[in-house]
Length: 182
Image (cartoon, rainbow, N blue to C red; front, side, top):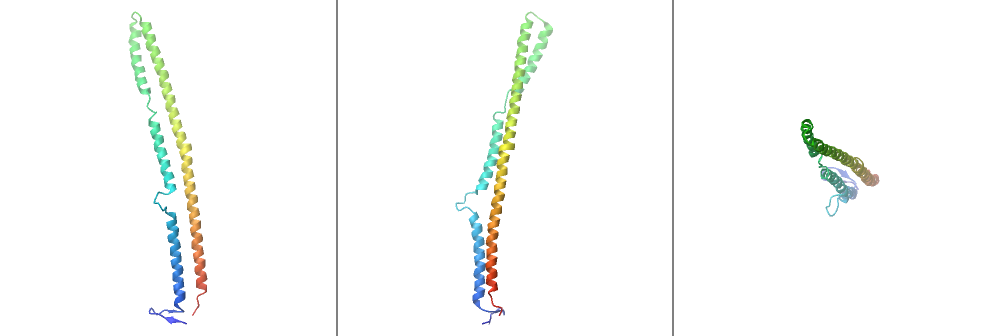
């Protein structure tokens, strides 16, 4: 039985229009459920965000660890070597009584300070290499793993969502195919 409604459109019955409205409501509910499933119920940040935050905190801590052991006495020792070198020149030039013992003492002090400077410089190189190793290997690998996990999660979620949408469209096609032409 065909009925004409107030908008002038002829329809073959209210039941099919209502059925299609229910189908649209079902699609809408599915979309809402999909979106709400992605949100965490206890409003805590998603695991991916927490892992990214942990990565940035680890980087910040790396720089804090770098600045803590980095100070050394190399600059002070260089100044002391320069001062002792300036003290040594007049002693050698004057050649007063006992000047060789005094010159040897200053020379030994200069040599010891130069060895300490070399040790400090080697330590600086070691600290920098350790820092770069942690940045390049440890933190870079963690960052790469986070990116790969995020991409895998995104692809899986999109695939699942597309399956739901395809299922809804297939159901809609079946409903529309059963509608009468009259």
